[in-house]
Amino acid sequence: MKVLVTGFQPFGKDTMNPSFEAVKLLPDEIMGAQIIKREIPVVFRKGGAVVAEAVREVKPDIVILVGQAGGRTAMNPERVAINCEDCAPSFPDNEGNAPQGEKIAADGPDAYFATVPVKAMVQKMLDNGVPAAVSNTAGTYVCNDLMYHLLHLLHNEFPNVRGGFIHVPYATIQNYPKFASMTLEEMARGLRLSIEACIENENDIAAAGGATH
Ligand code: PCA
Image 1 (cartoon, rainbow, N blue to C red):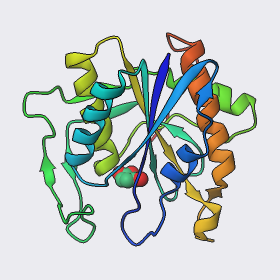
Image 2 (image 1 turned 135 degrees about the vertical axis):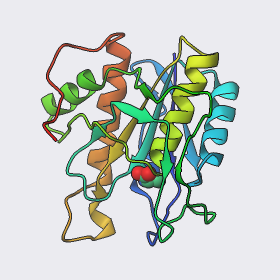
Image 3 (image 1 turned 45 degrees about the vertical axis):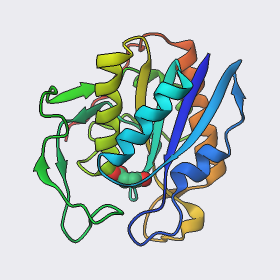
Image 4 (image 1 turned 60 degrees about the horizontal axis):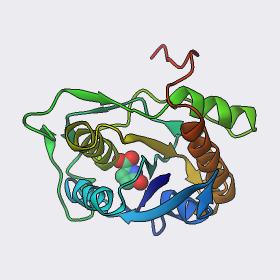
């Protein structure tokens, strides 16, 4: 079995992105599955093209995308990606793009649900002491864009490959004292546990993972 795991390059004012730093700490094998790691540019559409190229080359069984969500308080497997790119002109991507409410795929559905078992991933992290919760929005910036691109590709071309996205909080070494943070090692442990949960659970477990707001 092969698991493709991606993290992002730094973006905005940050000089590091904990998503790829944590991915780099993963072992090269988890439960007998080969772990293949890739870094993704924080650029609308281009990120999706890089992932598509990696999927075609690696031929993974599972794809886990990872991104930073500063301000989040836990490891957040994302439930859904929406067909929308929308960001403030004051916070463009790394190539200056700032789409405002455009569709990602003109012919695509409004949304795709993750095909990895988000609740099992959360449960496994919680059982092992890693803060985790299902997230019901991946935003409308490059992370949502990447997740939508991946799920659109898998739906159309690789229906047997499962895919999902995990948002991570700031890393403690980024030193944002007003925000929650985790160490890179703890994030990597959460990623490893999540990958194990994907390997162990073809289908998701029955558990509450909703949110009131
Ligand atoms: N986080 C951004 C894009 C890259 C990243 O790590 C996001 O949440 O959209």
